[in-house]
Amino acid sequence: MTDKPINRTHGRRPGLWLTIVGGLVAVGFAIYALLAAPDSTSGPLWIVAGWGALVFIYGVYRLVRGPSSLDDPRGGTDANGR
Image (tube, rainbow, N blue to C red; front, side):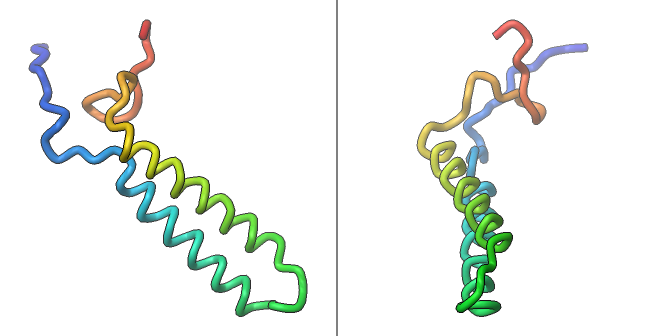
């Protein structure tokens, strides 16, 4: 098995999909919570919108910070001894 160096900078945007999906989930569930029951409590909908906002914030952080030293080139993480 040969270990070729993998170019991590070509086409890699860590956090892009987290930002897109988190933003869509947060905005979508916030709009649905407002339209579904504006006068009553729609707690579970706001919880999902909050989780979407957290995913969006983490995605923006990953976009700004860039690749981590724990990112495995083949996907997932590689925290063995690092």
